[in-house]
Image 1: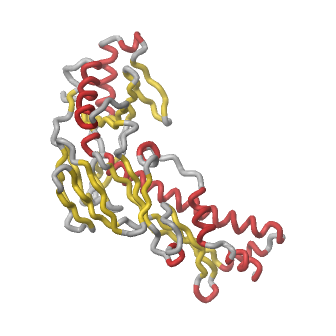
Image 2: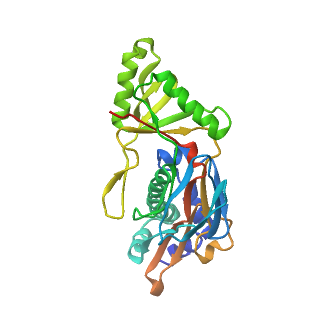
Image 3: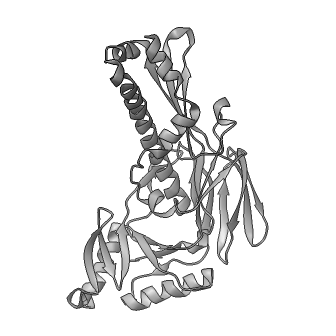
Amino acid sequence: MNEIMELMKKWTAVDTTMSLNQIKDTETFIYSRYFTAKMKGHKSNKIEIPIKRGTGCILESVSPEGEHLVNDRGDQYLLDLKLPRFPLVNPITASVINDIKSYDTPDQKEEVGRLIGEIQAEHKRSFLTTLEYMAAGALFGKVMDGKGKILFEFKGISEAIELKGKDTVSFLRSIDKQLVEELGKNTSYEFLVGNVFLDKLWDLCVAEKLDEKKTALWITKENKRCLEVHGVIFFPYIATYKNTDDEEKKFIEDNEAVCIPLGVDAFTTHYGRADHVKAVTQAPKQFFSALDEQERGKGYEVLSEMKSIPICERPTAIIKAKYTE
């Protein structure tokens, strides 16, 4: 078994970290779509993030258990927060190493790499699921921990734009106007919507005969059945989270929608250096991994760690809409 142990020792933290970061990401809808264009690494666990206040952004609540401070600076909030840490570990036991020993020598190195890669792929799926959950919260102004506790929440004090009583063009022009007021320029955008809002929008499109004119049509995009109206995409979104009372809550109510501006410098993923001695000499990476020897010759452990949080830095750029019966 000695030669297998020697193969294990050749996997440095640089190698395992590179391997983990190179594993193809599992596609996530919100995180992959909005929060991967701008990534910022930090050497310290404690970071300061400016949140653009805009004309209608207020701090709704702050959890007393949250490990952060929020400072009101007039035109922005400054968040002093500690990056959340997500460590995972899986063992490679001595019995598994014995099984690898049965392979012919040329295949042993490949088998060790395959085994480590399978564990890392499982870890990365968990990390990306966590990032998707946090990204959904950040997008809707709720930054939550892993138990669904809202650490802090930003809300717009502007009224949601009402769909009822408007035609499709005037509804979209209301969105255009509010985005220009917030961002100072025209920008493209898309919507995440509840099912009732989507149904009512389609009814309006049919009433305006946009379906006949082909300016409103159902399309498949990102594996979702979406409605495209005047070139704007409306994605159905029904994800939920659990609050501190273990109740299921919707990020978007059935009769609501949120407008997401595209190509705007508003969404950032912040990440830091892992809490591991082998990470000290490395530059911050979103995903860190190491192979550690267990005590008393039990085998090895594949350790992976993510210290990362997605943040929406312009919460008032996210415009709400609704349909009221």
